[in-house]
Structure formats: C-alpha cells, structure tokens
Image (tube, rainbow over all chains, first blue to last red; front, side, top):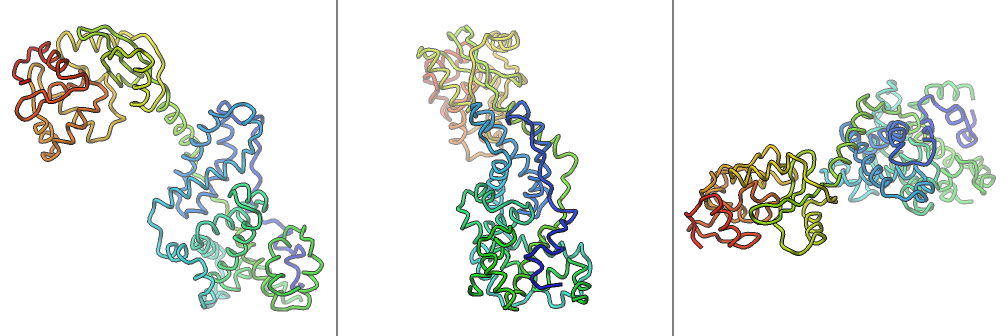
Length: 221
Length: 244
C-alpha cells in the first residue's frame, strides 16, 4: 500500500465504517411547535451523541439534550413564519446544544486534566511523551475506542467541539463555522490543533491500532 | 511547497477540493516525514469517525417531550379575576394548581395592576372571571378567616419563603405573632429580618396571613397597603392585641 493512500482515498476512508454517522432524517415541512415531536425524534440521537462526546458523561448528555430541545421549542414558538422557513434546523440545533453544553461544563468543576489543558492548550502539544509505551500490544478494539474517547475529553472545549463536529459528526468546515459562529479559517486551525494534540496523547501508532488490516497491507507492500 | 505548509493542508486534502492538491501530493511523494505525519493524522481522523455512535436511552424521547410539556405549562399565563370583598375589590391570579397572587385594588387601574402581577409572577396574565373554587376560597377567608391552603400555589417561591409563609398560616385568626416568633418557628431564630422581607413580598396576602405578624413589641410595623388596612383586617378577625 502506498504511504500516500490515506489522502488519495484509501480503504480507511473510502470504505465508510458501519459506525459512520448517518445524516439525520430531515423533518418534513417548516419546523415549528406543531411538528416538534418529529424534530425531537429525528435529532435526539445525533444531539445526544454530540453532547456525550463533549461531556463524557451519559447523565449530563441526557440533561443537555433535554434542555436544548426545550430552548429550541421556546425559540421556535417565538419565531414568525418567515424566520421558521429560513431556519437551517440542523446547524441551529447543534449550536443550541453546544451552548447548553458550554454552560453546563462551565458550572461544573473541570477535571485536573481538562483544567490544565484549558489553562494552556499548547502544554499538551509540548509534552515529550509519545503516547502509550507499547501501542502494538493493544489489541482490544473496544479498549482502543475508550482511549480515543478519553483523549478527546482531554482537549480544551473549543478544540474538542471542532474535532467532534469535524470527524465524529462528519460536518464540513462551512457547517462547523456556522455552528460555532467562527470564521472558516479559525475552524480549520482549531481542527488542526486538535488533531496535533490527539496525536501527542494517543501516540503515532494510533491509526494502526484501530485499522486491523493495516499490518497486512503493509506486509503486501 | 514547504513541509509546514503541507501539514496545514492535511484536513483540506481530505475534502478533495484543495486547489494546491497536486503540489501537496508532489511534496508528499518526495518527503517521507510528511508522509508519516499524514498517515498519523489520518489515523486520528479514522479513530474519531470509528467512535461508536452512542445509543441514547429509550426513555430519552418521552423525557424530552415531558420536559417540554412541563416547561410550556410553567410559562402558561395565569388568569386574573376581580373579586369584591369587605376590604374592597381584589385582584386574584390563579392557574389550575391554585391561587398564585392576591392584591387589594390600589385604584391605579387594571393595566397598572396587571403589569404588577406580571412582573411579580414572571409570567403573562389574561383577564378572566373567577371560577367557583376561587370565589369560594376568598369568601371562606372573609367568612371564617380560615384559608384553604391546598388551593394556594406558592411553589414558585424559595424553600425559605415557603416555610416562612407556612409558619404564618399556623397563627390562629384573631391573634398576632412577632417576626422573631416566625423565624424561631422555622428553626432560624436569627432570621427575623429575612422573615420581614418575605412578608413584604408575600404574593398571596390574606390567604397566607402576613397581617398577623407584628414586631416584637406588638406594633403593626408595616404592611403593603398601609398599617390602617392591616389594622382593619385584624379587627375583622377580632384581634385587639396589637399596638399602633
């Protein structure tokens, strides 16, 4: 396998994993209080997943999603028909969820790791440790996923939001810019910094840990 | 193209729209360290896309719907009716959970009074006529000076405010107690001034009888509608043991 394969669309990206997020079903018609139950049904899974990746806590994620939908309902109820028709529902719901998440995490005492990284995001980058000592020894895929989840939670919140939306939620740069209300350049920079920090935390072997057929491919090369 | 420029373009390359694509690929072919870096970044991205989508609990949707329902209910407007009484006209706000506000007519007009009720309750209000249970609750108070507190809703108030008002409801009609007595009754003997504050903000005077609370020397001290009204209510209840 060519070392350039990843960017040229190799097996890791072209064959979308079964776990890849599926686009949320689009609620029919203009969103409003009258079809709000359908909106909840369509988006609860996606927003719950996002809140869980952002907080790492199921209870928090549940409450965040509940509060977010209540906020959305109240806001929709106050909008006039034209505002509702022009509303881009999915990014708007993400934005609300992110705001509720931010408020909630702010009011909670952060963990030591999160506190350190919030104070100085670059500290994570500058650490000399190159991830786990013997990554090749790790064979349990579920355990790897836990490592990845934990690494994500170590990122400062703004970088975590950018990386989660980009890779876990599969959103494009312009969409993320809309959700976060940031310029596209800032989004790209945050995504990039997040990946660099995750590489530090997880170590250089991480892609090989979760791609079980990678070693086989390399042998074939 | 330099290594640092190529590194920055990694995420853009994934979208296959990057205008410098050919230049980046040319650089990568000749630069093993950048190839290695791209591999590693792809590994990170792949890990993140592979994170299993968490399954929300089956109870989440019903919980959300219930949450919205109760939020909508909590902000539904209160009805306000005008009721005649021995003290003059009363404005009484109520919802299905009970009476939420009672005010004597200050003679400033409906609009001013509605605005005051709205500000106090933090909800909108709609003019209405009093249903039988509201009329009966007020009539019972003026008839026997006893309040049907199960028909009064003070759940919006703080626990301290609720405890204070409940303590006032234990003072028998025709008698008075001091702010200090109320404070001691709720187990906070040093909170007499705070009790005074709660009395001043009582949204349901008469039914929660803040008029039966006087200062430690038995003086009427103060009342939302003036101490003359306070004295009149106490006299209606047959109380003479207060001082002006």
